[in-house]
Amino acid sequence: MDDIDRNIVNTLQVGFPICDAPYRQVAESLGISESELLARLQALLANGTLTRFGPLYNAEQMGGALTLAAVKIPAERFEEVTEIINAFPEVAHNYARSHELNMWFVLATETPEQQQQTIDAIARQTGLIVYNMPKLKEYFVNLRLEA
Amino acid sequence: MLEARDLAVLAQVSAGLPLCPRPYAQIGMELGMDEAEIINRVAALKAQGLIKRLGVIVKHRPLGYRANAMVVWDVPDELIKELGATISRFSFVNLCYQRPRQPEWPYNLYCMIHGKDRTTVLAQLEQLNDVCSLARYGRQILFSRRCFKQRGAVYQAQQLTVAAHG
Image 1 (cartoon, helix red, strand yellow):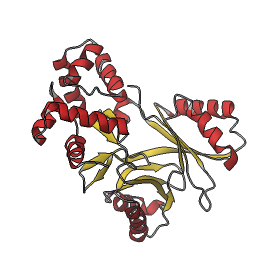
Image 2: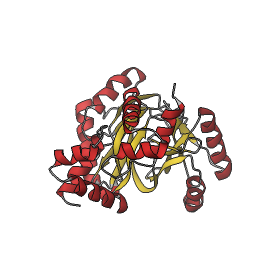
Image 3: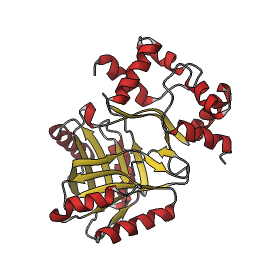
Image 4: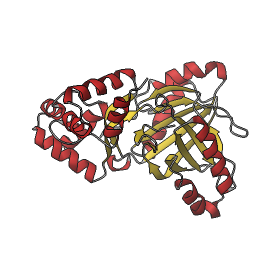
């Protein structure tokens, strides 16, 4: 990853033009050619630096529901429970964290009803208490990470 | 209300925008619509907020962001709005939410910091503590140990990938 790649990643985390030749417009602002921008984007997607290039939808406006949930997994069951939880397609993010509540995951379901069903199913399959912590208020979101 | 043609556009661009000089024309070709219609519909969906953002989604680790801390505080309910707003002004804070307290888990204010290493993140937290006078409240720092999944939500019915950060 060189300075041009870093520039591309930083610029395209902010947004992308909606016009007939958007790559050309971005390329001009970065001082490179359109074909170079397209080639570099392709490479950044292929090597996994970027997971996706496209729209980010607003889950709630789409009628979907999101929540953050956590479980306390006994050390000897960690691998087994991780597999159970990751197998749920509703689990969008999942992190092991350094705490007694040692696994934290985001559940994204198409409806609010499915959220409770998924929580119940995870509790049933793992035999653990699932702490459900849906957001009450959002103060700030900025997931841009400077490359 | 979304029209069927909007849903078709959302589904078509969900996996990603085509990497070619006229991406919106390309999408239109797949859907039997012209370029202008796609541009108008995407712009309208963005204006309505249904599309939060168009652009790239990065993976944290290849960019060198290895220390991801979820920090939680137990702050008085009557102060949470003000504290949430103050914390959100720091450029290193990526997310700030209020969440419900739980039995044996009294924390109600959550903030996420993606940093390059733990030392930096801990120093940033100290700064938060000082400026916002947070030291008096109960706090936990939960660094991530492993990332098992980091992707958008996948809605089977509509074939859409949605921003999912809880």
